[in-house]
Amino acid sequence: MRHAIDSRELAPTIDADEVAASVLTSLRGCAYQWLLDPEEFPFESALTAERRAMQQRLHPFLLHSSPTTGSREA
Image 1: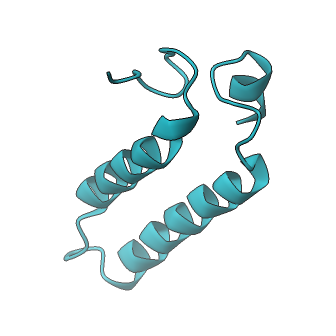
Image 2: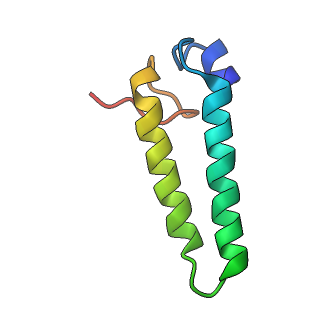
Image 3: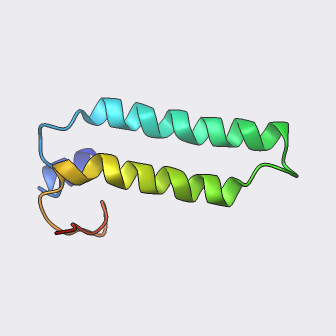
């Protein structure tokens, strides 16, 4: 997050600590669900869904296209 802000890929108005905490919480939740039921929990699709949700959350803060944050849509 901080690298993307420093390199002007993300607007400095984003709360990097809040987003980082959200990502960490989501990843921990996925890992915990997988530990509880590894046979039934769709780990890969859960991570894909989390990635999409994060891209949507970051989209308003994107300043230009970047491999770090994903592509900027029109």
